[in-house]
Image (cartoon, rainbow, N blue to C red; front, side, top):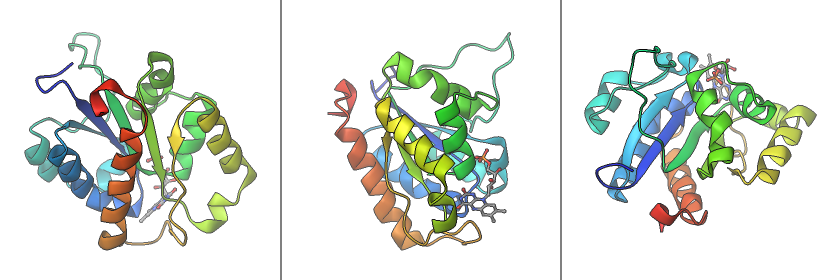
Length: 182
Ligand SMILES: Cc1cc2nc3c(=O)[nH]c(=O)nc-3n(C[C@H](O)[C@H](O)[C@H](O)COP(=O)(O)O)c2cc1C
């Protein structure tokens, strides 16, 4: 539990839409969440780290702590947005080779609600491995939203579409039954 009792981890992956993740952070804060941003190592090139740190008042985390560092507080809920093809597939496979994936690997077993908002193009979304990943995550209780149609890895992002999607992801979280999200 945090000072507000509601700590949301926003896990951001290396997709074009990551540049607008500050909009998701602001929306979540508006709903009363304290937000911790976690970036995959590749996503660090896509986000404005100082701006996110100013907004959250917390360091953006992208690597596992060292053994001497204190354990960070546990999330009350997690949103993965934008979620890449790579991270969705690794999450489904139980791979934990980034800090972000390590958090995700434990979340279902800890009962932490997770909402995933994939941004993958239609070619990747149609692949059997990706469809299997989505199915298997949903079977574990992870809320995986549909990838926005036409989403393209080379896309530079569409801020209007994204702000609508950030709201959808937050809305999905409120349906998870998380005591702190009600
Ligand atoms: C400009 C650019 C935009 C990208 N956008 C996406 C995207 O929207 N979705 C996606 O799945 N991958 C996208 N990629 C590819 C990912 O960055 C790549 O698969 C990376 O390994 C993902 O790492 P992560 O899942 O650890 O964040 C993009 C790559 C570049 C260079």
